[in-house]
Picture 1: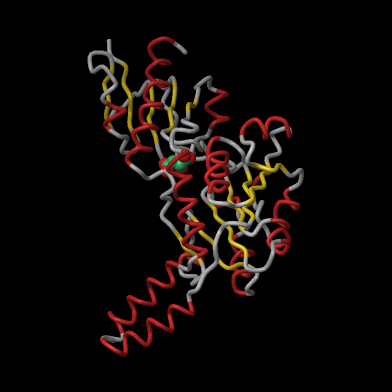
Picture 2: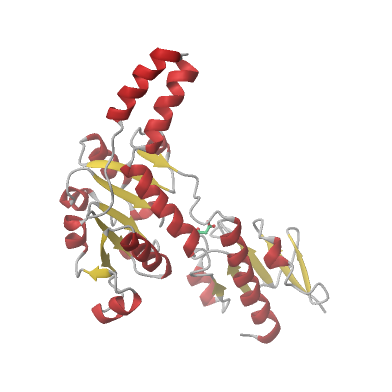
Length: 305
Ligand code: MLT
């Protein structure tokens, strides 16, 4: 007998090859799956097959899966917290640096000088000198980063930011002060999200999208930040009230918004760096997530744990 596993997204072969083909039948066109392997496909409107025993997501967030409905049917949903944390951390650090040094705007400026204005020689040199002043940035040491959510990703970000000389504040309603210190001695934990916003030059989000985190970044909280702040969203789009953030960018209250969950309005805003959900998109993270998801699913199907 083989266990049928349906893949709803491309899952790294490094994970799939762990499945013994004498025991598992794996593919995209399986009609009555025992297990489902998914990355970003939205399962909310999917008819749940009667044959289904378990779902595994190659990623940390489970908001694309109807977890409560699955639970009511006794179908466990596995995810892979931590497996892509380093990839997200590196992109957060890249985002802070590109915001601090105006990299996207500066590179676009230089490209336009040559590709659209056709400048060269002395004319180009003059405009390079202008760009050098226009896109002057700021350095990170001495600035404060507020990390909302001190899970696997938040703690890695906090430690990396600390090593770059940033003061790091952390807020996570699920943790006691003792726990936060044990997770990372580099984080000063604050007890309210308002305190975090009012003391942070940059705020980075690492919480799941749940009822309590919807619109967590709103107009009132952004207004508490020192002028010229930066918001980085590698969590989920719904955690940010984007209209409020765009208004704060227009007013100069915010300097930049790095958003991994682009909307039409945000994608065309000159102070937004809108990315196509790249946080976990490295070969290493995709392999790690696939291995963890596959192992959990196959263990459950074979042994019930
Ligand atoms: C996650 O929740 O970890 C990410 O959404 C993974 C992904 O990019 O698919």
